[in-house]
Amino acid sequence: MATSWSQTFRQEGDTPQLIEVSKTLQSVEAKQDCKPQEPFSATLRESGSGDIGPFTTNTPLKYEKVFSNIGNVYNPSTGIFTAIVSGTYVFRFSMFNNLNSTPNSVVSLMKNAERLVSVWDTSGSDANDMGSNAVVIALQVGDNVYVDLQANRRVYDDGMNYNSFSGFLLFTA
Image (cartoon, rainbow, N blue to C red):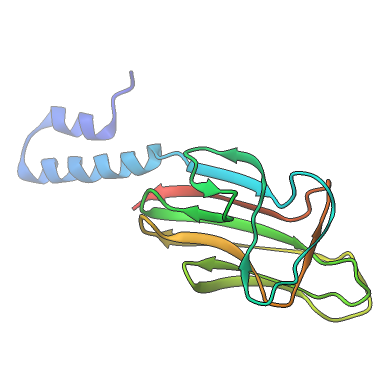
């Protein structure tokens, strides 16, 4: 087993200054050893194809096909990720617009009820456009993160899994 820097300092002396340096090094080493946790990744449809939406109010998208969900922090029945550890997290999502002649897609990544970032495609004569966005944010235990489909908008998905939602804990607070 390798000796850490903090162990080396403690072995060479116990002056108050060295003890403080040792504690600081232990803290740094702990953060370096922290590996991403609570990863999840999902896509909208378990099977089938077609539009999701429109709804009369903003609606969390339910990503039903789960690729990974370590710790069961993402709930595919609600579309909501709930933090069980305070820390800094990474979230990413993608959106594929509807195949109608006029695009009509707007989705936003939400933290509790706060809009963080969005992707949209609402004008033009083309179809089959895609967009994605990502954030690195601090969360507290119990915070919720989800992708919100804006009222009167829609997204399209099929077996190609265009619409995805993923996240993981980068490091603890």
